[in-house]
Image 1 (cartoon, helix red, strand yellow):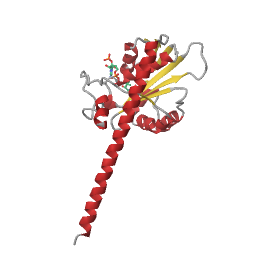
Image 2 (cartoon, helix red, strand yellow; image 1 turned 135 degrees about the vertical axis):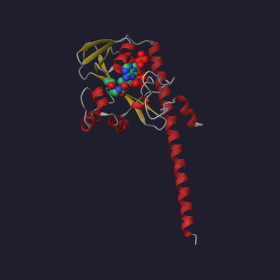
Image 3 (cartoon, helix red, strand yellow; image 1 turned 60 degrees about the horizontal axis):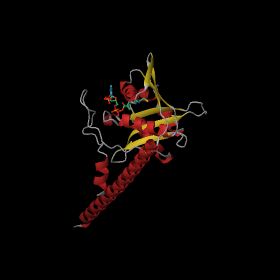
Length: 236
Ligand SMILES: CC(C)(COP(=O)(O)OP(=O)(O)OC[C@H]1O[C@@H](n2cnc3c(N)ncnc32)[C@H](O)[C@@H]1OP(=O)(O)O)[C@@H](O)C(=O)NCCC(=O)NCCS
């Protein structure tokens, strides 16, 4: 069934309301469909970012971003020039978002900057690293020669993702820059990306169908309850 198929592809509902305790690694999903977002997802991106705590906003943007600043950032996202990636859970909630930002000006060496956020209850499952790998693959195929990440030096998780991918990290006091040189595209890298896109599209379609199915079921249940209530009222 549609619902089971969607669930099987991605088991990303948190086992509890909290992240794993320190030192305990949460189960990592084997396949994580990562969808390239379009302008119609702007509202979902905004909701995702507004859910971040002040501390997370500080880590994500490098300053204490207020709601109006986040709204401005999301309103200015250029979905044609840049790549915005998202991971949806079974209820179509956007649980992680990454932004691969291309420089506005043409540069001799093409660079792109990576930024990411994962909702707290979904952290430690490898989603941040998978989003980085997805952005890295796209950037390689798009002939970007260097990926760049600006992070606070205290941001161990982000810097671990960059280091694990082979980036060079330079620390400037409380801030750090990470650089990852990318190879030229290959047939293999292009096929990998095409497969990723197919998986993400299929997963999303299954989740939308499941969502509609459960919505329909809820509607029928509500109607039945109303009818029962109506019968009860008309009884003497
Ligand atoms: C940074 C962030 C995206 C990481 O997401 P995540 O899904 O939890 O990351 P992953 O599960 O892929 O973990 C990546 C690596 O970081 C390590 N890590 C995760 N949390 C960590 C922590 N609190 N301290 C140290 N290392 C940590 C993991 O162990 C893993 O390294 P490993 O594979 O060598 O074990 C997430 O913490 C977040 O959204 N933070 C707020 C916003 C932010 O800081 N954005 C980055 C700035 S652009």
